[in-house]
Image (cartoon, rainbow, N blue to C red; front, top):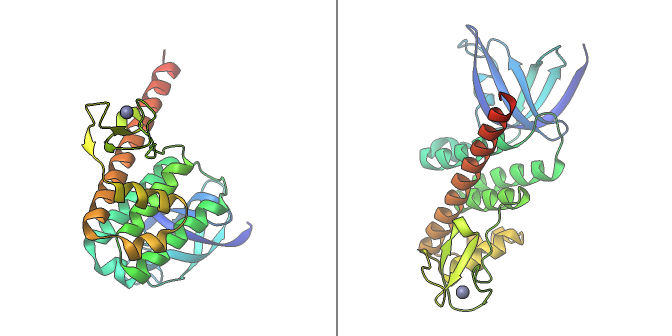
Length: 242
Ligand SMILES: [Zn+2]
């Protein structure tokens, strides 16, 4: 059996048999993989706690016939802040689930890995939940989900944008009612900065109100994206069985 090393973010784990756990990881070198951590559910396990969702680990694995087997796992960052803040942990979990549900197995994506690991590190540094929303917005944009916020989706005007209709793909101006949910100029600016990679700037300059509005917008985008994926996989399922 071949032995290899890689670094990865733990996306999710689930039970296998009496004492083992399957760990779903997004790795730098091999993309999303599923690996077995043997004996982790025993209290004396040496790496059980290192394989919690949201942790970045250095791994040594054996290539198995079906699933690879983790033989070593060392935490790269301790992530004490993430682990002690339940709300932050919950938000992070949603984003990890989204990555898990969207990324194809065994397809390396170094750019996405850098983005995800960067977000987790920034989250540990600042404890700012906007980091999660910023990551999600960038991830969704890579997936092709990006609302148009610089012009009205109905008439194309670039001014007096007052609301957002996500079903139509973006902002709506006052001349084209109904304008849907309110959309502030600050959020439009913050969203554009996030997509432009200026996350630090957004973290430093955003007021709590705008942060909340941005988070709400992003979580609705996540919902919409997941719903669409579920629908398309349901259609695929029907096609396969008809
Ligand atoms: Zn309009």
